[in-house]
Length: 169
Image 1 (cartoon, helix red, strand yellow):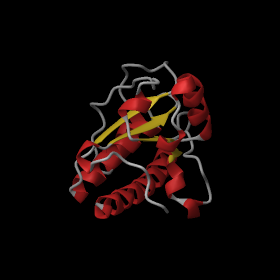
Image 2: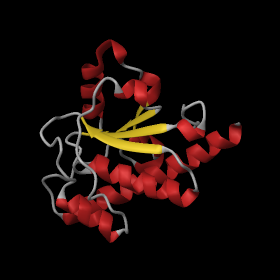
Image 3: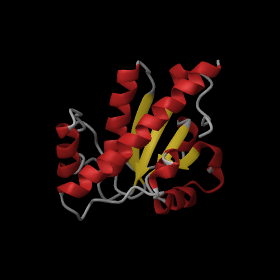
Image 4: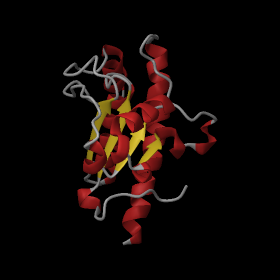
C-alpha cells in the first residue's frame, strides 16, 4: 500500500475514525489505534465520531467496552460525538468504517469535502476480501470480537504506514 497523506510533521498528525453512531466501531478503532501507536512510540492524536446524532454524549456500547477490555484497552472514557465539516480541516486522515458513513460525511461536508484526506479503514487490508467493517450493533459478542480483529489488523497497517511516513523525512 502506498503511504497515505498525513500531516506535515508526525508530531502534529491527527487521525479520525468514523462510523454511524460513534458507540461501536469507531470507539474501538480509536482505542485500538491509540494503543498500537503508544506501543510503537508514535505520539499522534486519534479521535472518533459518528455521522448520526442519536448517541451524542453516550459511552461506547457495552459490548464494545467488553471486547476492548478483554484486549486490555479502556474505551469507557470516550463519549460519542457527531462528525462535522470542520473535522476535515482539523484532521489529516479520516477513516470510515463503511461506504454509507463516507457518503453521509461527504454530503454533510458539502463543498468542504477533501477526498485526499479520507478512506475506508479496510482499504488498509486489501487482501481481507471485504471493504467495510460490519456494524455489530444488533448482534452478539462474537460479532464485536470479529469487528475488533478486523480493526486491529487495519490499525497494524496504519502504524506501519506511519512508520514509512516518518522514515521518508
